[in-house]
Length: 290
Image (cartoon, rainbow, N blue to C red):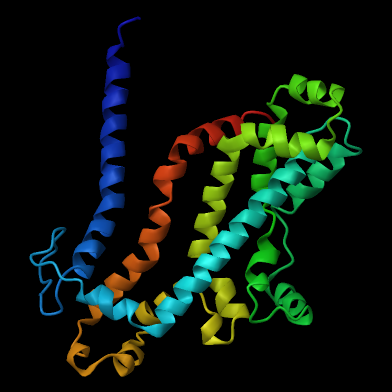
């Protein structure tokens, strides 16, 4: 191997320094909120800390003891699991069709899908459509409008095109049909792109709150992020206090808000270690072809 030039070493040094600073700016807010959520209510945060002086789980007990937090958590889990499964299944099925050269008018349908990335119906028509379909206060109002993401569909199609055509040809010689090939051959070897799509859609569904604000008029149907928004932004601490025992009503609003943020953040973070090994591969392979 050739020895790296001076300019190359300087570039690498600045690149490493930039990535370290980027990681620190990303990690610091998370550590600060974690410290705040684990601190007792009587601790003063006049100085910024990233490690708690005392560790207490009272804030989490109070947040998880709030009925709307548990209801919102269940609603968010249901939306994330069902929505992610349907998103990935429909995207993979559509990408498999678009990846075939013999699909009629494939170029036209691909361009038609790409156009939807830039032009959308708008908020008011979408709201009227959901209302006319009778989907208000229904989980399907949060899933069906975003069932297919055009960008993800193109990425999955590019991945399908990179697979060896000989696999499908050999299966058809043995008498397999397209559905059998998709379920038994294509999907098992497409785990990198499936994991990538699953991660994207899981994060999207878990973090989404605006559609719940529009379509969910009943608080019992709100997702966890909407409950967090009411607590953190709207300051509905008095609602929590009204359902807490007398000995737990002396709370620090900042530590409660931090605990609420952590409750909504930690579950989705725990998914990353299980799909990280597929994520980079799926991104690279799916973005090569045009």
